[in-house]
Length: 250
Image (cartoon, rainbow, N blue to C red; front, side):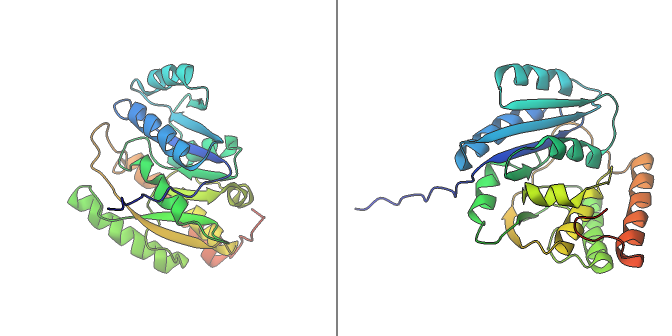
């Protein structure tokens, strides 16, 4: 009887893995380990960049210990918390490989599903975007998340099905040309809109989303909400009202 053979994932020429982390001391070690395994499944040439965004727990200490054991890991420490977008931008700015994969340090996504993104690559594809099969958050966060997606899709003309899924594989060239500026979670909206405007081709892949087991989300803190609202208004003025953005320009 013939044995079924599992098709190996597609290979990438090179890969930068970028992880933002904030108070993720309970999960970051496992996410780093999974990210290294995932990278090894799709390429022989990879690097891992983690931004410790001013964590108040032991995230920084864990990352420094991991970096001492893994030469492919580079850790960036923000002295104070600057926001999700700022953490991603620090990581993107240091990425040197052809492809950039990013996800979160809180283990709500499984880095090993990177192989699903790689398998979705085809001729001319520039971004592979994950979309959550089912969101494992509280009822109110699920409701707000669904409203947010439909609202920004309508307001900004977003064409993908899950703008807020932090599980993406991107050509580094696009990130360089986009010149991202968001300091908070609106960086996802800014990225997707700028990639669309640049004519990037998207593929979409379903991925799992898991409950947060460690740390506390900053989603509902007043400073975060106020900053997000300000940045959202700024992006709406820039992209929709003024139509200022052109690919390759700020």
